Length: 384
Image 1 (cartoon, one colour):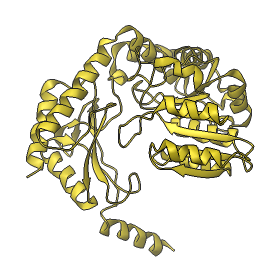
Image 2 (image 1 turned 90 degrees about the vertical axis):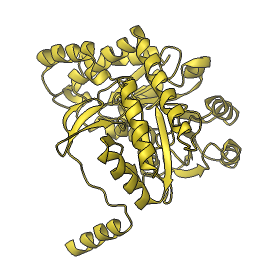
Image 3 (image 1 turned 30 degrees about the horizontal axis):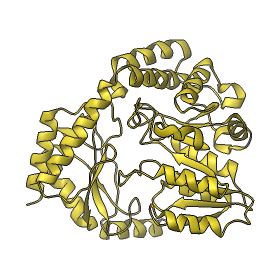
């Protein structure tokens, strides 16, 4: 039996798809040590550097003294605290919803949403490039899963039209697609959900803290938050911590409390992380220069890559993919960059389709101009 696993792993190596963990030491946000060398990280999702922001760290330290390390149980047993309640109130406020619910991870939130809101008599209609957590949630729900080509809303409407007999139609998208960095047309999806009486679920994991007039996310502008039924997000990206959340009308949140197995049966997010996330949200509101610096860095990276001749589109988020194509070639480019002190692991199948391997650059407000200049130098040499 073990030989079968070894054969599968060997097959992955032959296809340049084998993965291994890499130990980063002295991790300091955008900097770390790897195998005795100092490196710059352009691969994390801590877009605003809040994981090390003094206010967030001090808040976490105080919460640690008050609450300890863990939550002790699932939320419905003894795991709900004032920290959870305060964070949920804040999340509901920024997402313009009646209520919110915190999960122990964003992956668990997405599984919980789709398994609680849909079943065998329902249809889930989803963008092809949605995150694995949404795909897995749809499969676990036992609903019929129909996928439309990426951002092809004409095909999306066709699927909605032929699904009229379903008990419920759940329309699902990411706001910012995690591997391409592009954004969904939320206005068009709202139009379609209203026309076909569907429940619209959006994953704003990579938009929260980065997009919107106040950093509240991709749903903030144009009053979209009130028109979207379910807004999911994470505390692990621009907020710098860990956890997931769902914001929606109270009846939908109550449904999750009663039917989402990933909420009911999972130990609660530690209160210390709730307090850190709430403070991170306050920092986003009160220190807009962080987002301004982030977007300045994003544009600097984009312009630098364009000057080097890379065919990349105008950035819509803090994610800038450099497409390579071949999996082996992408791994070689990663190694070349690493030799120059730049750490951007190659993203390969099954995270992206075969033949579409890439270096996925993620930009942080804490990157300096010197960091970005070093990144450009490394890419210039890596092309040769």
